[in-house]
Each structure stands twice: as structure tokens, then as C-alpha cells.
Image (cartoon, rainbow, N blue to C red; front, side, top):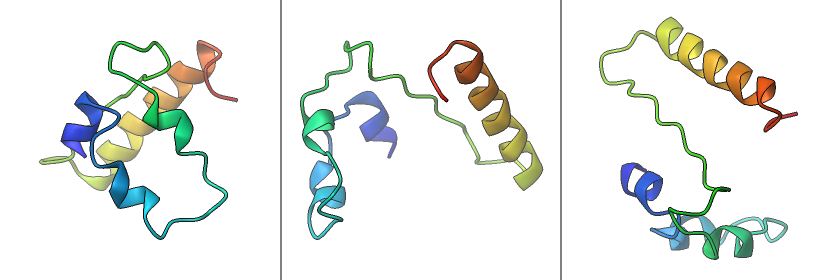
Length: 71
């Protein structure tokens, strides 16, 4: 997953093979790291308690909603 954050095309076979046929993986396959649609937010959960992870994700979602990127 860390490598996928850096390169959206990395390891797509993992999710494409034997996956749900309704998924639209062709949209991801055409992305590059420089593409503005590839907005990734990584949360380091190594030493975080579950509540801290939840708080970090909630903050990220709220920020995305405030910027009109998530409905």
C-alpha cells in the first residue's frame, strides 16, 4: 500500500484480478502521481491507538468535504 501511494499504477493486479466486474479500474490505470485527481492521504497507524486513527481519518474526511472533494 505504501508503494501504491507513491505510484497509483503499482500493484493493480492485486485488486483487478478476480475482482468485482463492476469496478472501474481503467480510471486508476491511467493516473500518474502528478495527476491532480490522485490525492492520497496516508495515515501512519504504527503507534496509534484505534481512537487516534479514527480521529485522523475523520479530520481528513472533514477537510476533503470542506474543499468540496467528497460528498
